[in-house]
Figure 1: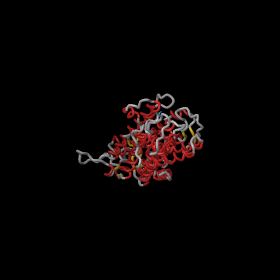
Figure 2: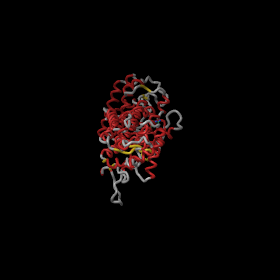
Figure 3: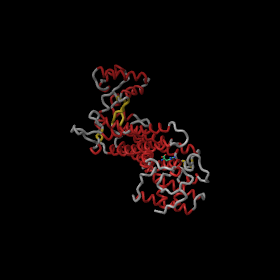
Figure 4: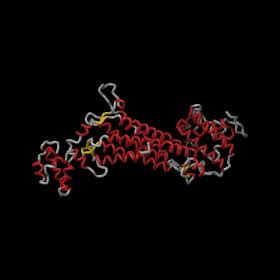
Length: 475
Ligand code: ARG
């Protein structure tokens, strides 16, 4: 430990609160415990170091500290980073926050120069910087996980371009589709999630450092240089706003909430698709659980847990929106409460994506049951109407004729329009011919849907190719 030189009345050790000088008495132990945030903000240690290195380099470039002092600070911070990474240095949880811990450790190691690091800086702009650096570091990891899940869904889809599956609206049979089309619909939700994160990243590409506590600095700081060193696109434009803004935390949790809502919808389908009644999918034993009382059970708990954790992420969003709602300009200590919900929502979503991908990769699809789902629900009624449209009948009339076919089938105890005889349907419209029957099988209906984005295998092939192209270079 470097010698801790005394300057005038400053004799307390480096690990005292950064603000202790004005106080004659130390804080109550319970007060310290109440206000500390190090258990939450410790995960930004490397970002804090990175920001501090850039800040010190700027101070030296502006001749506010000497080159030698900067060198000592750089080496000291590097050694802290190395030792944190190797486990040689552990976090001191009695520190107030990660900023205090790093600064105190630096001063322990290099002495007086360490005391110059905080020149022209406040923890108010420092925390805003750390959060941005942290998000800019971890959000691309989350995006990678999302891209990987998109690719997995596209992979499974590419094996099921012909696997029939009823499409539903209102949870009622609607029109025939395929499993591939369905899985691609999930993947497109995730594409939007990925892009939404990229958009949010753009808004945190500005450095707040140099905004000080709230009113900038009277020292000749060079904010643009720090921004450049840290790979930002520029600097924020108002010092009050810079330390008071937590929009980006709310924006990212909103992004996470949408991801979570999507995962939850997918999980909902997995849950009921794996019931005896549906049986479309069978989850692997690795990603299922049993019952302590019912020996036969194989439950989709992982899908349920992912769905259940949606409440947690939405709660995190409400937490932050509410915490920020009446805060006067500029920094208020309430804002320290931003990190717990932000990190919780991020961890939750990341964990859920990993589990969802493993669960879906190891699942088995039951083609027969999926195909059987297309029967018995009159899912081809629109195709019957379209048959008549092709023969020149106005769609509104054709809709009525097809409805009469459905009605007749129901009234005569038949499960499908194709169970009616040709003469029965001809009695409804003479435009019907024998060729109708081949045109309204589930396969034929699915294959005939060739508009862009529709479930015919050719179209699905194109979607899958676009999804693969989207993932290229992103995983
Ligand atoms: N731990 C604080 C936070 O996360 C850092 C800023 C502290 N600023 C202050 N004026 N006490 O918000």
